[in-house]
Amino acid sequence: MSAEDRELIRSCLRGDRRAYKTLLARYQDPIFNYCQRMIKDSGQAEDIAQEALVRTLTRLENYDERYSFSAWVFKIATNLCIDHLRKAKRIAYSLDQELDGKDGSFRREVAAPTPDPSQRALAAEQMRMLDEAVAELPEHYRAILLLRHREELSYEEIARILELPIGTVKIRIHRAREQIKRRLDRDELL
Image (tube, rainbow, N blue to C red; front, side):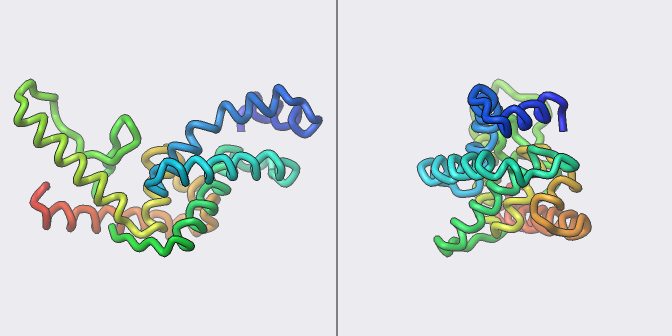
């Protein structure tokens, strides 16, 4: 954890309202973006992200400084997203190599962009299909992939957040990539 985060947390625990605002501002967008990718509904994602941040601040005294603060915050958000998805009884399915778009969507790496409009249209369609495939992943795969590729957390941080052995995290990432690869092969996108 950064010294700045540590000091902010200590200030929050002393009741410093500016520290609360600073801490919220630092994590608000990343948590909302993560929830939105998990839930696929902006309104629900906003509610869940807000709840995650409220829980973070109200349970700050329970935070263990030996661990990454961001991992703890994302764990709270992940648990709330999974609870929401279970309640909604959403069922999903299946990722391939490290596929990461700048906007947080999962994408195939493409060599150099080409000025040809038909190539751009094809690439955009492939990216859309890949994003859809990620959205169809079972929640336990989607959560891990979003934490790994969008939030750029280490395997260790993901294991801590989801309370899983690191081997399980690696296996789920591999299996999810395989499911995405099969889906894209089936759709003839690879």
